Image 1 (cartoon, protein in one colour):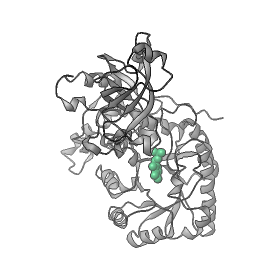
Image 2 (image 1 turned 180 degrees about the vertical axis):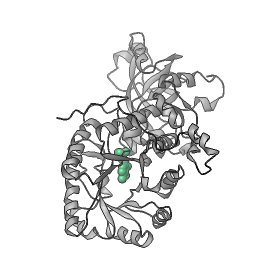
Image 3 (image 1 turned 135 degrees about the horizontal axis):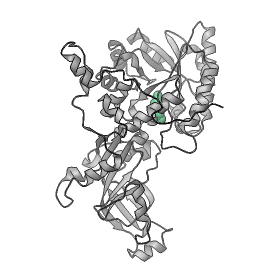
Image 4 (image 1 turned 45 degrees about the vertical axis):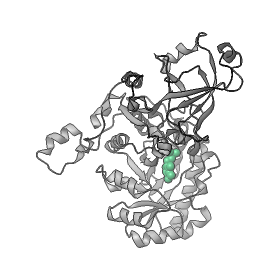
Length: 457
Ligand SMILES: *Cc1c(COP(=O)(O)O)cnc(C)c1O
């Protein structure tokens, strides 16, 4: 049995971009150095998340008209992203991560990742452009959308992005016409029946079609077991399938040296069931057993890196009582139907689109109640008998009834002006948020709980 435990600070990460201070010192002599693009980025604090929340909440006058301060906001802890990277390096040292940026293309997250030497999985011209604008070498990009707009393929060609996935003949011919230097990665279909987001509905070549797709400069195979996967064996089985295609390709004169094991790795808040540790324990050894050391292995983790790094704070803007407001009654009937409806200032059309698109379950916790701060350990203060709890539904701010974040949350009685927070809001939240009904996207404040991260900015 391999020991797969992970400890913080076990590993050091060497930055691949020149740190800013050094860059500045060099700049007078070497004009071309451009690592200083971090300039113009928002301020990075070094406070604990709780202190960030508390400081922001106390920074405005609750009876004033300061709409900006009253808005919902995120605290991003870049230290969490950094720790996830160390964990990856420790548990899957052979696999190079290419961050699936659709998950959260936040400029500070992206800057940190670029500095850490992480690659990027891009799906569109704009995504590729955002990465190239950070002066990342195009060889650190994989254009991992199997069905691409022709002009995007041409853009990739002009900008020297060579690696791209495909899964059908028509795409192969399109790429051949528009990108003579493409390095093709054949995306195969895997069993996604044990995943919440079944990507096989849309992408992946069935194994009985892969022979016909072995043309041009195909360098290897990719797969994606689906996001929200609840069976660690899915990765092992997919690797076995990939091996079959490697062998088949050999018969056709191809010598594959590239394997892309996709995404779907859970974030650090998943500590039961299919954890990252469990997946790593199966995936790492299976790859080593089936693929010779010369085969380059990459992955496209998305949620893994950012899921737990973002906390969202929202204000209760209104409350509706749907049953008796008598406290004793609330307590007595706590197991029955929700007695209140709370309306908060971010919803399903905003950050909580993840409840629809990504099957996430978002659990509200009290952040500020009656002027009292209650983040994390301070939640205990709310459990005393003095504060009756009851079931309530929580709704977003728009005029649409689909805008329901949770139909049943167990909460103490809250008033408009109190605050709720939601942990683990970093994946597939802000990136797909709309401004429906005129509600702006919640803004992000940045901190790091790992001091080393400041070195990269
Ligand atoms: C969405 C996606 C990912 C990332 O998925 P996660 O579940 O966030 O890890 C990786 N690769 C491809 C091709 C994707 O479409």
